[in-house]
Length: 464
Ligand code: AMP
Picture 1 (tube, rainbow, N blue to C red):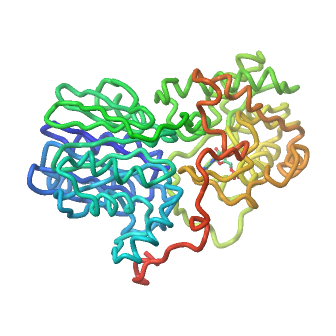
Picture 2 (cartoon, rainbow, N blue to C red):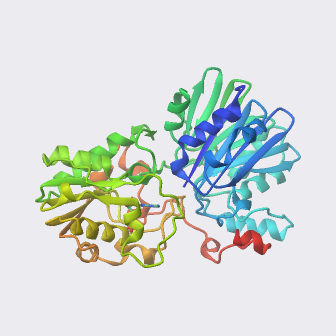
């Protein structure tokens, strides 16, 4: 889970990259960074925190040059410390290289162990750095060739942007797990995880960077290459369920329309005897709209979200039951009391949030609470870049639908079927990754991957 953005050939590259990242903030709030290239030097600014806090005007002014790439990070591989913030910049025989990455590699530990045995020194514990090491060890006159060599060794999920002395390079793994789109802004090119970044800049979406494609953008020219390895596409369907912004177009489909269709389908598959349809904001909004339209039950915004909840609010000393969820969501008693509520959320992971919300709605006077989920039960952890807990912590991996209903304290529970969900997407069903629902991992994970966490040699960095 990360957001990446890049721009090539613009007088205010850093300013526009900042705005692009700002629109992708929902993809990661732990750290953010930008690097620019002025034809001679890389300029790097990164840190822990959110885009708007980190990039004040004087900081942006230091990012000189006509091309830039940026990253908003949510750590899935590698710990949440400043040293792991991206972009990562290194010096090589081909000149400086900077990289940003969305996705998780599945064999980086094995490669890293080999490189370390041969003397490589890593600056970070992130999987991304492996790609730079492989490039640095295989320098070529054409930097795209060096990247191709590196990518022929790595496996797993990557949507990448590289800033080099030979232009901006975008690459997507052969399965195309994570999204990456190409846009045009006047004479400049840009690349982003999601199209909502283009909307803010008034850039025009040109095309997806295709699975297995490498695109070089240099002096306004575009060159497209294909990785030698081909694989069936395996686009992450969870981007549509939860992760992407609803105003984005992902894998050629409008996220808002897909979510609304999922809700409508859910209403047909799992009807409920209710009086009102209530979304859990924000991810339940569009499915609830679809559910309401298809069922004819009125849509009520009866849970209001506080949008200013940061990651670190201070808990009161005296414990208040379900405080965490109450800070974020407040039920409107006037809309709920005495009614049978059909509560719509996008997914259940551990089940603990759903239980708190069901309780909260009941305490606000609901006569019944019917929980409806606009995706199938999440049973397997993601190895390709979505932050999911281990299999033991996924409630649907261990419990039946009826047990989950009992745990969440809902009067009834219904999930959308897998076929129903895939039917809401315009691509062929087999072109999407469904590993978190079915465990059908298209790229196996090397045994080294799951062994112990990598630690920084410097304790203060590990603690940061
Ligand atoms: P829980 O079942 O208590 O673990 O929480 C489920 C809620 O977390 C749902 O409302 C989802 O919208 C949200 N959610 C689903 N997947 C993720 C994820 N990978 N990271 C953060 N939140 C998620």
